[in-house]
Length: 242
Image 1 (cartoon, rainbow, N blue to C red):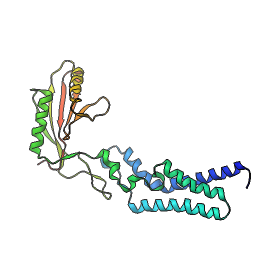
Image 2 (image 1 turned 120 degrees about the horizontal axis):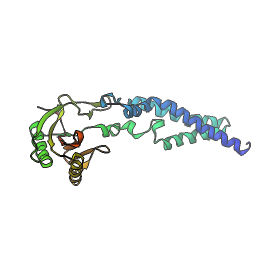
Image 3 (image 1 turned 90 degrees about the horizontal axis):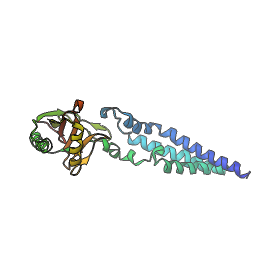
């Protein structure tokens, strides 16, 4: 046994070595959440890594650190071996398993895609349009409505082998109307305050988007030059627009 600080440095070196090994081995896995986070559109989001790769990374990381640490211990480098074992534990706890192939999302990737999956309704296009028009009338009053079917833009998680997919023929129904208003932003704020009492705000900051329990979304947008308010009611995604 040497001075205590030498043993400390050996232990810390073992931890750093374990962290580097696990990080290097897990790089193919870490590219998956990185790709999801940086994808500009959902069609560019990568599929989750295959389970065989996840198992291989988890096993290789554990063998390198635990078996490697035990082997080093047998050859008399106690603190280095303890550092490797401690590093494996620290990497697992510190990264939630992401750098050692043991993150829950690797084994249940649907949770990772949950924020990007659309809500689908079982109603027909006729029923969706009827209900959307009723909500539009409630918000926009007697303003003249227009309706259109918006194909595509609806995504589901179709399993590990396929990732996010857009079901053929799916889409949503949108109905719109413009409310005359000289001070559009004030009108948006007033309507948004009323809608917020009965619906959930689902827009980003400074967006007046509100969803009800059935998945219908009301969007309020002020017109150009602060005149007129465009009200859009969008149905939940439908598996068929026919």
